[in-house]
Each structure stands twice: as C-alpha cells, then as structure tokens.
Length: 185
Image (tube, rainbow, N blue to C red; front, side, top):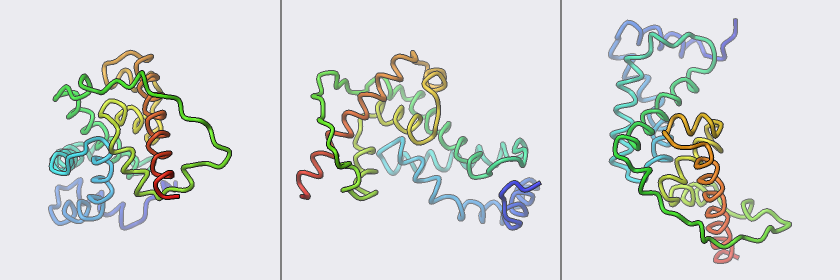
C-alpha cells in the first residue's frame, strides 16, 4: 500500500515511536518551519506562535503511536498544530473579543480578480491582520477545509456564527485587497 510517505519519513516515524531523541530532533527540524506557518495563521504574536509550536511538538511526540500510517503524515501533524492553536485561543478566551464589522461596506465585484494582483505575502499579511475570530474561522474553513458545523463544534459557537464570521472575514479581506491594489496600481 502506498501512503505517499518516503522511506526516510517512514523510518523517522518508526524511530520517533521508539523515543529516539535524534529522530525527534530531525523531525522537528524538518517540519518546524511548516508548522510555525500554521501557528502564525492563528495567532499574530510570534512568541505565542512559538509557544504553540513547542506545545504542538510535545503533543505530536506523545500522540505519534496513534498515527495509523494511512494518509498523509503532514496532514495528520497539521491537525495537531491547528488543534493546539485552537486550544490556546479557547483557553485564553480570545475568540470572544473578536471585532464586529457588521457595518462594513460592500465591496464591488471586479471583472478582473483583484487577488491576482497581490503577492502571496501580501495576502498572508491581510489574513494575519484579520480580527482573531474572523481569522480563526477563515483559516479553518478556507484553508483547513473544516465545515461550519465542525468549526462550531471545535470553537463552541453556533454554526450560524461560524458562517457569519467567515462571511465577514471575506468581506474584510476583499476590502484590504482592494486597498492594496489601489495603493500599488
């Protein structure tokens, strides 16, 4: 059965299962930058993201025996880090302080996609600048692929709240992208 894992990755996982410290360090070195980007999508503060990264790796090494070997190891890891970030947000009750932009003005649709005119870095900065609740729901729905029902369950909110937060995040992102395009062109 082909699980999409390289032989090197499989050996690394097997050594981590035996608590091999060198293998754990190698796994950390290999995946820390990618998982840090996941953490930074949920929290703006680099120090907090670093704490979440460390906590995520602690959980990963504790849970590695539960990895079934089927499916993407990176995908399995990513869920651990997303859940660790969400736990941080819930524990610190950050989501209840989300800004409300219900009065935001509608952004006109343009025939040429405004998003194509900005760089990936500019787009990520726009996402990072979203209020915490909007950013969290946007990341979970648009990037991680959770349904609104799953988001509601994980965050302890109503499904309608998840939908509303996502719609508002999209609107705010559209406004930010429009402003960037206006400044750049």
